[in-house]
Amino acid sequence: MKPVVKFVLVTCVSGLIGWWVIRALFGVVKMKQLRKLLGDEWIEENVVGAEPRHALGRWYKKSPESLVIRYTEDLADVALNNGALKCDTARLASKLKGEFVDTIVELGYAVFLAKRGCTVTMEPTAPKAGPDLLVVKDESYYVEMRRVGLDEEHRTVDAATEDVFSRLCGTPSRYSIVLSMTNDYAAFSPELKQASRRVASVLKDLEEKKPPEAVLYYHGPRDWIVRGQDVRKMEFDYADGAKLAAQMQEFERAREARFVARFYDSGEARDGTQVAVLSLGDDPGPVQPDQTYLRLRGILNKKREQLPKNSRGVILIEISALAKLMVDEFTIRRTLYGDVLVNPVVAAEGQGIDLDMSRAPNGFFLGTSRVSAVVVETANVRAEEITFNRTVYPTNNPQAHILQLEELKLFGEIGEELENLCFEKL
Picture (spheres, rainbow, N blue to C red):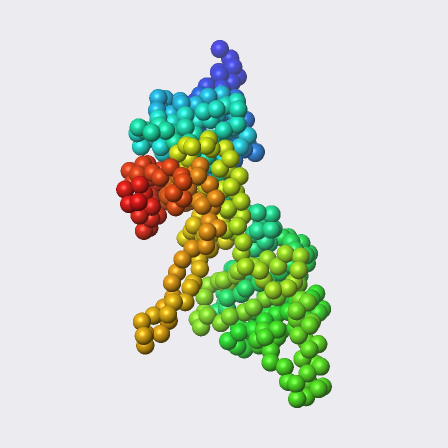
């Protein structure tokens, strides 16, 4: 055999072995179940390709040993091999290819319930519209799910926040900054870049002078002022006409500012600058209270229509994307059980007035008898593990199917001090 031919053969064999070793080392061959479910050709093109567009491929590009890939592989294994979970695998594969994140939420909760001893059927009424899951364990339950993302307004301000963070958060400083801006200052826009530069310049000046707080009213690159306090909260001097006129002019000018930065001295030097961003929408007027609880009620009201009447219905909402809005327990309970009412009550003689706390009858649960519980899910993807928090909120509507304590525990961890809403406590 000619030396050239030997060289070519050795090179090809070495290349094949090297290719296999690389695949083994980087975990590609471990996606056995995903390859069965989605197909080898699709995996090669959309996951392990050079420029993947699919979410799973982007996670693979970050790290072939990504926990997200491992988690998805485990879910696929259950879907293909666990008899407790019933699904149309072709339809599941199609949804994973097209709506990956939403489908992972559905599949993840289905697997969670199957591992708790339930028989779970995905899309039990397909191809007709209906609930996402039929769950059976002694009784039958219908589950509808929805991943809740940021609304358009919050997505806009979130993108702007990321842009501002990249510009300011790495700057060592003793100050925290709260920015209020209208939609004119969109992410990566020239307007936001110029305003951010001015904020950085003011921050540098404040670091030298160290006032306890300051406010920047920004109208443009050459039109801005800095004051030691909020001009819109000034006390007007009605005794001096000339001074009052100047105050009124400054007040109106500050009120019209479409970009305002408030600086607060933390009292200590830090490696970075803490920045928060509040959206003013299209109007530079007063910041409106967050209406997330009303949006959640609207979402839940739409999802309940997918649940059969006179059934044990459960809705899961996945709200990990709302973490930036700091959606807390107060917001969730306000959504489900109604607004908090504080009623002054005359106490015993000489004891003054007590405050009686109650709920307005405008919560989600009192508007429907189809829903026995709502589960609120959040996910936390860390370097070493993916964890889930699934909190169960039982209905307070006596017309609904009230679940027993053990039934509620199937679906997650019962919310603090809500056990009194289970069947045994009524």
